[in-house]
Length: 65
Image (cartoon, rainbow, N blue to C red; front, side, top):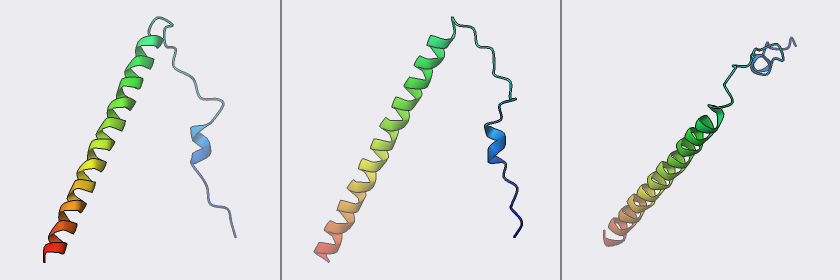
């Protein structure tokens, strides 16, 4: 069997050039990324709660039927 070529190793190439982000901008970028992660987690919790509420409604309707 021939090995299949993989593009994943290209993601971690040592030769890739890093972006030069000014030191003064790094704290701002970190705080923005943190906010986005917190919002994504909060949105996921809302979606999970909505799905569980919907499941409860379906179960109640099945109990009544």
